[in-house]
Length: 86
Image (cartoon, rainbow, N blue to C red; front, side, top):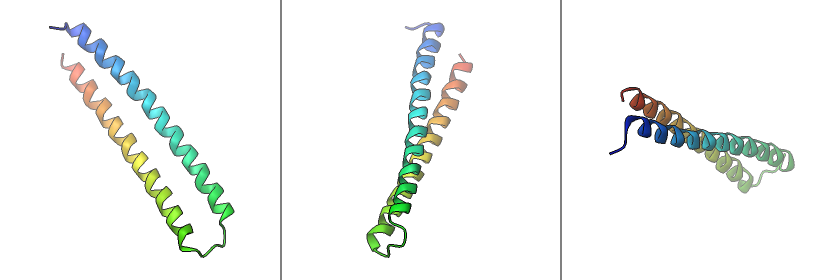
């Protein structure tokens, strides 16, 4: 059976990975935002239905990334609460 110190160390290591993942999610959201701006400029004035679909899909992707980030924040909080009780 692992000691309390070993459990805390393992949780801290996992949380470091979560932190790195959060940074990657933030970077992805920034790149996605840049792509949306580029597409908006490139497709400005187009009335094609596909253009609206592209914008909607990118917005949905951004929303899902935001939800993912929120889930990771909650997971970190829950893990920290757990280790506080050890």
